[in-house]
Amino acid sequence: MITTLGIAVLNRGDLLFRAIKSVDHPIQNLVIVNNSNGQDPGVAEVCRQVELRDFPNAGLFEEIKVHTQKNLGCGPSWNHVFRNHPGPWLISGNDIAFLPGSLALMDETAEKNPDAAIVFGDGYNVFLMMPLGLEKVGFFDENFYPAYYEDCDHWRRGVLSGAKLVGVDGFKRLHGESTDPADSSKGSNTVRSNQEYLRKNGITMQNNWEYYVRKWGGAPAKEIYQTPYNKDVPMTFWELDAVHRQKNDLW
Image 1 (cartoon, rainbow, N blue to C red):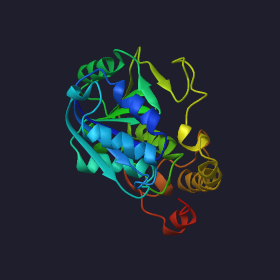
Image 2 (image 1 turned 120 degrees about the horizontal axis):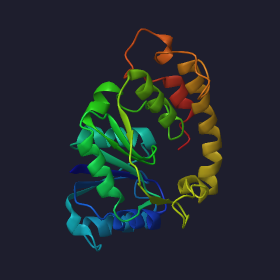
Image 3 (image 1 turned 120 degrees about the vertical axis):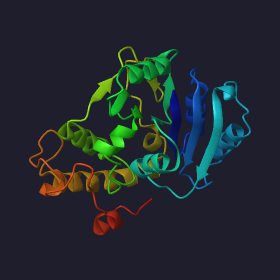
């Protein structure tokens, strides 16, 4: 059984509600990390409805929790779910809609691969983190704030660690405004639907790219280092870079 479904959200409450209503497989805990700190009325209203179980498939979830706070960022929100709720943890973007049967396929794939560290439905848009994944690959590096390149970093650590990374054959979803499961071009609706977020993301995404290069000696697919920071440290290792994080404190 998928124990916890964690969804972080900053805006687009309509897509968040669509994501939740698309779940068609029993999951013990639904956890929403509301990063709008109550400032987005659409997200706040959806969170209120979800806490009241005012949605058609509420019976699929045993427990529902909403954590409302200042923007933690993407990777840190996922870490928050890992640290505060039991696994295995299904992590999904709030702009994802699961197509019928896909979550059952993910659960089945995990059961058939008990030695898997991470089971991927749609890359880091939808993935199932197993406890072994935290042990071998580790938590997400919270220097990648608020988002972008945390997935590249985690994937590289996963590959270099020798962890078993498994894909789900036949998994289908809609991403963002797309009506075709094969189309990912209309995803990333958090920044696309807000001009100020888009402006800030242009700055912080570049800063995150520079941090990635410092950490791995090159851009994604051009890395040189075989260990984080080229140090004698485990793949799970990362340390907070206060100077870098201060540069990204725009959110």
